[in-house]
Every structure is written in C-alpha cells, then in structure tokens.
Amino acid sequence: MKKLLAVFAVLFVVAGCSPEVGSENWCKELKEKPKGDWTANEAADFAKHCIL
Image (cartoon, helix red, strand yellow):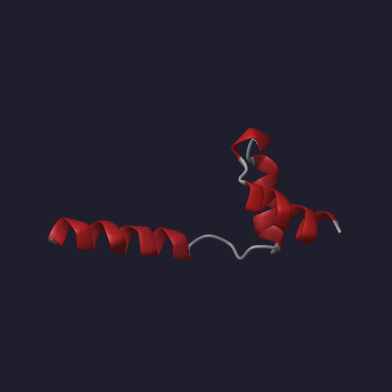
C-alpha cells in the first residue's frame, strides 16, 4: 500500500511540473517532441493555441 501511495505522489509531482497547455513553454516543448509521439489531444491543442 505504501508503494502505491509513493507512485501516486511521484506522478502528482511530475504532472504538476508540466507547463500549462497553450503556454509558450508548452508550445516550445511540443515542437521539440516528435510528431509521431503526439496524442490527438496534444495535436488539437497545439493547433488551437500555438498556430491560430
């Protein structure tokens, strides 16, 4: 049980460090990420926030 809580704590901290979707840093990070690794949501958000 303690290991499960530790895993959730690590995931929560890592998720908290990601830049906000649509921010300049987020757009920059996504541009550096191979397009084949983008999710459909990332592609849609990139088009909405970084291109338009």
